[in-house]
Image (tube, rainbow, N blue to C red; front, side, top):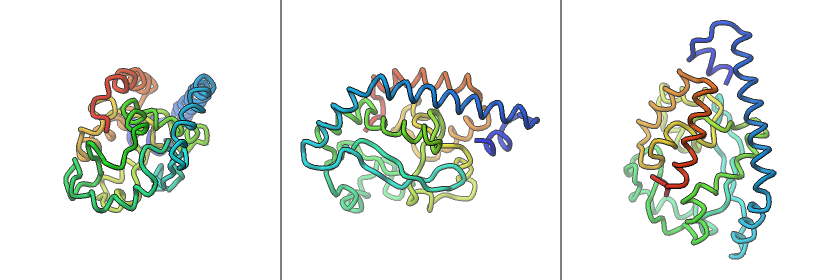
Length: 218
């Protein structure tokens, strides 16, 4: 985030840059710890429901974060065991085009019944609060892509990797999966250029109705 603010914002002084980063980090820690404590009984219930089919409760991926560094990215498992091996056969049904950078599919046959509910309300993203505590993610920022997607980025598109990735972001509250990659990229860069705590708060507040109404969630 330091490089993000330094290169893309109007901050000129190092002390202002550091203050902005520290405020964002403190806010991330406070909110993520509070949510985890309040929702801990609900989280244990979700783990129980997911594990009823005999598979693991969590799904781990390698994602690309700040400065193109890979990190372990958790979600609640919403698909059948072995879903990754089935992905290549489904690429032709990609909602973002067969040759799209990102992969999205409505009515994905790999999604379980419990997983469909978790995805509908973005509950599967809750484990990423642990990444926020670790510092590999923030509450608000560009979503972290998988290495397979980054391999297709142009040098210009890699600019979005100059920010610490977020659990939610500007395009998540503006249509979510219905928005194609090019528009996602432009919106992420606009967020980076105009970063402020006020912007983060607005995005977090808009995330609540976006999740409840589930527009573009699949």
